[in-house]
Amino acid sequence: MTPDVDLTAPKPGRHAVRDALLALDCRLFEFAAERNWPAAEPVLPKLSRSANHGVLWFATAAAMAASRTPRARRAAARGLASLSLASLTINTLGKRSVRRPRPVLDPVPLVRQLKRQPITTSFPSGHSASAAAFAAGVALESPAWGAVVAPVAWSVALSRVYTGVHFPSDVLAGALLGVGAAYAVRGMVPTRAQIMPPARPRAEVPALPDGEGLVMVANEAAGGVDRMRALQDALPGCEVVQCRPADVRAELEKAATRARVLGVCGGDGTVNTAAEVALRHDLPLAVLPGGTLNHFAYDLGVEDVRSLARAVKGGEAVRVDAGRFVSGDTHGIFLNTCSLGVYPELVRERDRWSRRIGGWPAGVLAALRVLRADRHPLEAEFRGRTRPLWLLFVGNGTYHRVGLTPGRRHDLADGQLDVRVVHGGRRPAVRLLAAALAGPLTRSPAHAAVQVSRLRLAGVAPGSLLAYDGEVTQVEGEVTLEKLPEALTVYRPLPGS
Image (cartoon, rainbow, N blue to C red; front, side):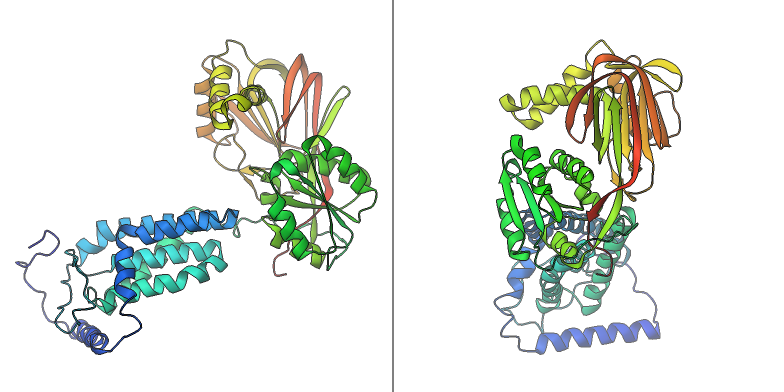
């Protein structure tokens, strides 16, 4: 006797509908047991065992993540999150709510039976719930990967009846619960398709069916050799120029003189340079993500060669805002964020150490050094008052995420600068953490948040650092930040195309 099956409990009274359904369930189980399944005999028992404790699905998620495409990684993560929720529900509620015994194995041929029989209750099927949850979670994020995973999930669910450890209704209930878990996860964490920025305002751009007229400048440091090969396969008429980081600006300037469409492959800093060139030459921009974070490309809705090629071939584009900063003779644009204070200091310290000890250790060391400093990194006149500031964050568009770190923008042409300020004071680490946990509150003792179209800072100390799209420069005196509404035309696939 196991704690999950109480054989001493009195049986429930008769119920005509329930008894008829249970009888049908038993007949379906016996029908399946009597069938000869020669093709399934060497496969389904092994597949059923491989799904124990979710091993099959963790291995599948690892294989998907190894493909190195953002959509595959998100689909794998969503699949595992859905599986976890389904397993938690099964183990805490499902198995203990309906104490149904396992089927009798007499009609099941010995060759099909599992060597180790499960001892938990039968309803619902945990394997089926996990399989359906993982497959549904993957499909909600990436239909293409969902089509690959679905037959495997179906086979796992089928194997539970084939090996005699579950009735058909157990499998059906488990599968429904798994799909429900996937949709519950989507409700808590929307898919990328749900939060794609609106396809407005649309822009008139040339359609390039084979890519002729597109000049793509690729930063060699981004390691985009495979991307460039895939791009030329998709758009054989495009011209690709690969160059070292130090030559990116010069090559973009040359490309702008002969291109109908200026293209760029690289990280956010490289894309920032390309956007500046495109604005000066009044050219539409085609962005192919090739860096580490790729905030602008992903917020735009361009994740890979396929999505960009579709937009270029179809002539699909939108106009988006750009941000601009000016401080004396120093000026520039930003597509993602611009910040003063602790973050630029951190970037400078990280860059100083990264070549010696690596990126992540350098980031940790930089944070420790900056947060332990006994001085405020920035003092400026803000809203008529001179005050010490730990951080001034300005986003090109409103970011929707708890905290001060960049999240996702739902609209790249909303005409707003998303301004977050962490006030100066003692214990900077505590203040920054409190501001991050508080999220975009209008005002708090630690920080303030506001959306404006223009911001002016005065009294900025000489040598103060300003970070924009991963680059760092020095500013002093008066710093003005403002929006350039719908200034940049960018290719992106439109819904329904």
